[in-house]
Amino acid sequence: ATAIARARAKGKGRRASKSASVKRDYLLRRSKMLPLSLLKAAQGHPMLIELKNGETYNGHLVNCDTWMNVHLREVICTSKDGDRFWRVRECYIRGNTVKYMRVQEQVMDKAVEEQKRFRRFGQGRGGRGRGG
Image (tube, rainbow, N blue to C red):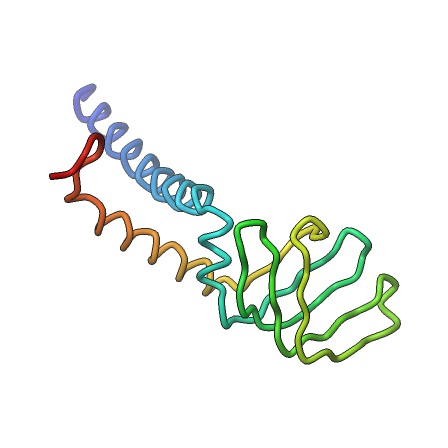
């Protein structure tokens, strides 16, 4: 009877740990995402940017650089208090003025897939030293 009880407990623990490991893998996959690779994946997609002064910019990301400066198109700018709106065709936002950026969930998934593909592509190559 004790062996059966141990087997049952072992099976339950395995199921619980499997779902926990799936969740952990999902969170690790998300946490290892580099900000610049996420922004590169977000090109052409809508995003929201809030600046340190409180203004928000909603638009489609055209490009970004290594300092996280961004170029947006079809932008709607909202004042700090939210009572004034401006429609701007294009704008350039300096990276050090940004408080946070928000992208769609599908962009996050796309970035994860691109990162997986990049890792698979680089697996067959040598690591250190000179090539030959």
